[in-house]
Amino acid sequence: MDLETIGEVVQIDDVQEVNQRLQDGWVVLAVAPGTKAGGEPWLRYSMGLPYEDEDEEDEDEEEGDEEEEDEDQ
Image (tube, rainbow, N blue to C red; front, side, top):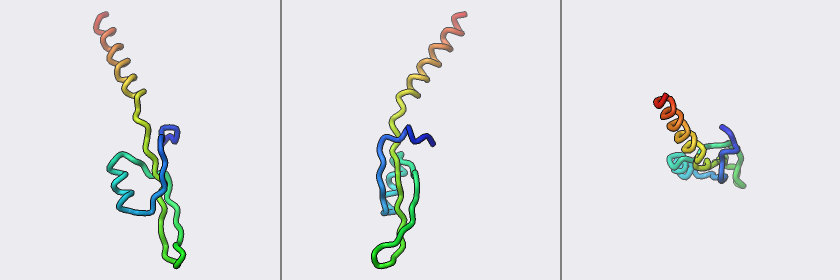
């Protein structure tokens, strides 16, 4: 994964929210263990939301143009 493609980063310790964000297109960047004040263990998830990939759409259009040129020859 290329971190340059990440547009937003959050830290979350609620597993249900992590699962929801995964369904919404977020990715897990890192997981860090820790303990709460009372000694209870917890995990903190760093999550990133990738930018919408406009370059990919441009590449698809360019490939379509190249195919049309090949057909014309």
